[in-house]
Image (tube, rainbow, N blue to C red; front, side, top):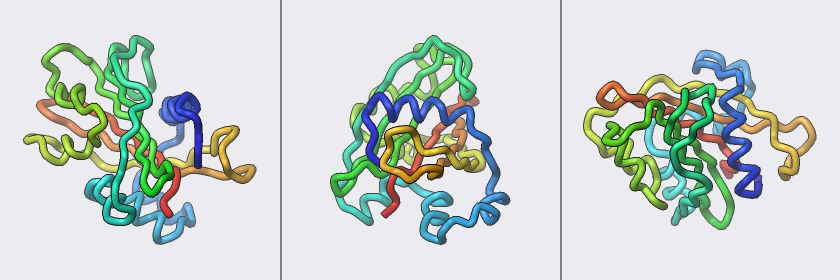
Length: 176
């Protein structure tokens, strides 16, 4: 799926209104084993993309403190929207929300990522606890290269560090 940066950001922000399901609901969705493997990947999706496609580029679409409340985080919160591109195609879009953003926040290293993947911080920082994965089927956005009624799969997870939350939503654009 190929969306403009503005459409990708809107799509990511709209995903917080989705109906999120726990892992027990996945078998009822009739997903392919390959897609299930991506959705339930316990490690870094960036590393998995690299293993499959080689180089992965992180395109930062939006980043900074947001004053508008979201279903995922009350204001103010830090938001980072990115797209991971591998083999010349957008493969994954991701949105990180860090509620109660203040200077010297436990998730401060996220602010200095630039074009580095979030996974490099999540899997390297001490004291990071990962909550359970949740899953959602999102309607493909208007203008996307998709069939009428097509859905896109997403997953989200809350990570905690020193009691502070980071909510990561990942939308699978192309798992080829």
